Each structure stands twice: as C-alpha cells, then as structure tokens.
Length: 109
Image 1 (tube, rainbow, N blue to C red):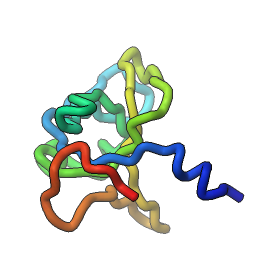
Image 2: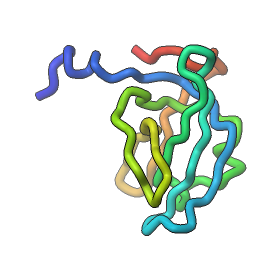
Image 3: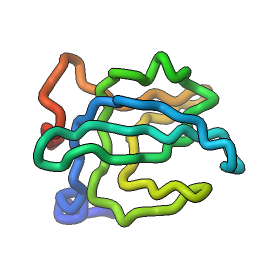
Image 4: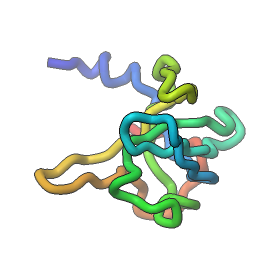
C-alpha cells in the first residue's frame, strides 16, 4: 500500500491545454500537448495516449490535472515532462479536470 508520504511526493497541478499536435512516429495514437501551468512552472510538453478518445478541439483550452514532477520520458522522439491524469472505466476513459476555471498552476490536494 502507498502511504500518505508517498502521495505527497506527487506534485499535482491544474494546467490549460494550449496546443495539440499529432505525433506521427508514435507506435500508438498519442498527442503532443502543450500545457500552461502558470508563472511558477511555465509551459510543459506532455505526451498523452488519448488520441483515440478526444479530438484536438475537445482538448484545446481545456483545464486538466497533471503530475508535473515526474522524470522526463521520451515518446517517439518527443520529451514528455509530466502526465495527464484520467479515470479509466470498463468501456471509457475520462480526463481529470476541475469543475470551474481556476488559475493555471493551482495545486491539487
């Protein structure tokens, strides 16, 4: 089991998707997302395997919850600096978001 100390090591933040691009070289359908996390963190590139579930238009300007303190990972030659969080059901996946607009970079507790 994970302890509360384990959970507190994760830096969860709200950011706004500013750009969505296809990554043609990827083996799986993924997007390259540019997400604005506000002044403290800035803009990050995050690769997300959600291309089959969301259109670019559905993602653009959407606020999402992300982990921003993971080690960078290269996906199809693109460095991903975080992870977009989602809930997975038996037949679908839903991005985690906030229920009203909030400042980019806001911490999730």
